Amino acid sequence: MKDSFDDQPPAPPLTPPAERASLRDGVRFAFGTLTVLPARITRWDRPAARTGMACAPLAGLVVGLLAAVPGTLLLLLGGGPLLAAAVTVAVPAALTRALHLDGLADTADGLGSAKPAETALRIMKQSDIGPFGVVALLLVLLAQAGALADLYAESWFHGALATVIAAVTARLAMTLAARDGVPPARPEGLGAAVAGVLPTGSAIGIAALVAVLAGAAALPVGPGAAVQCAGAVLIALAAAEHLLRRCVRRFDGVTGDVFGALAEVSATTALVVLALG
Image 1 (cartoon, helix red, strand yellow):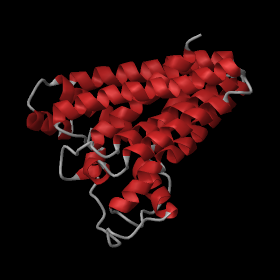
Image 2 (image 1 turned 180 degrees about the horizontal axis):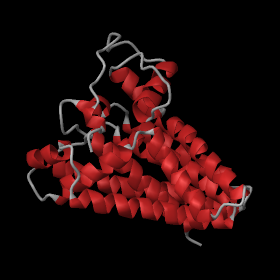
Image 3 (image 1 turned 90 degrees about the vertical axis):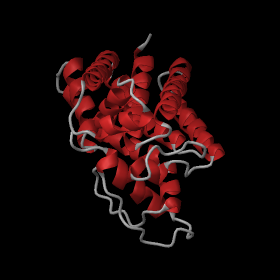
Image 4 (image 1 turned 180 degrees about the vertical axis):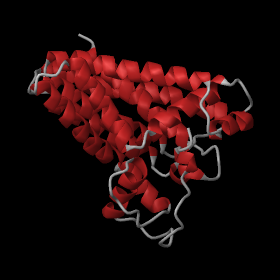
């Protein structure tokens, strides 16, 4: 694959790094780097990255809502759950130019190479995709579509809610990965721009808030569903944390590809958990 987070050249700093970034700067940073939705990045510095990664779940909320609409409409118009699920899975890929999926494939190739960190990072930068990447993409996309098909078979609300929760959780995993103490593996790319920008306490606080809101969104279905939705967020973040730690040990830090892999793994885990029972 030719495009990845790490292939995107960073914009030059537009403001002094010491200047505090506004919420608008952060929202533009989040949408400009994590989606293809129109958002002109006005600042590219550490303060803007800090606010932007804190706003990453907001970008996920918009992506999730946009993905849930066509799937729900297809279901209401008489389409089957599998068709609705397939379209729903395709929308986030389109809204990110498949960069998260590309990051997943590149990370799988790097981890599966069994090479030293420098060589593994070079493998991840290559434009082609290896067998580990192919298998990872197939399994993740099949799991996402299968879980969503089961959820849409329950009702359009179950499918739509799961879609939104998965998209938000995917970006929330990036927020946690941008906490201090997580080093970049390269001196350039998105990974270097956002690694370590958020205080750990802030990242954990955002994660807790999202989990509570996910549970609250499911309350119309019942208290059991609320617990399951909140639990899905936390379990997905735990899976992403496991992958993050492995990547840090393996690559001596994180890259933009790793951020993409974290997003896909956490989204898939959340959907699988929500499809259970």
